Length: 126
Image (tube, rainbow, N blue to C red; front, top):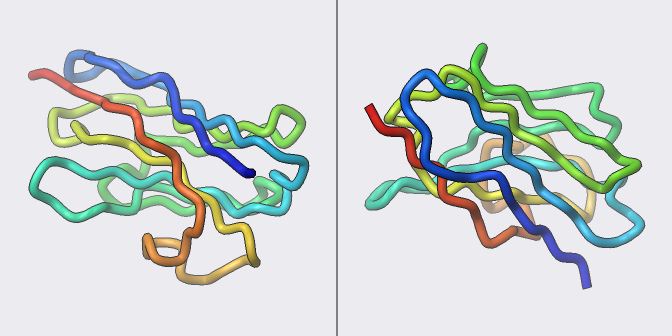
């Protein structure tokens, strides 16, 4: 019944900014820890960022720290990923994911998340 739908991807140049959105259906969105992952062709799925249920705690991969910001609006059932100073190495399919069953310390592991969106393509040209 619960669905995650990403949007906001596209083709940009290095140094540009982009904001991804993930709309989540259902009335229990505020109970979900949310995360963003990305996967480039031929590479494993990589943790990008995560945010707690209330939005009071965030976590980032070292590769995006200082450039990306994860946020959420529980009233709109939406989580965001603001991406600034984009680099060609940021090129990937970006996935929104949710932990619906409980909170977890293992936020960087894809297996922790039980709901996933279909992904949105982000391409950064040099």
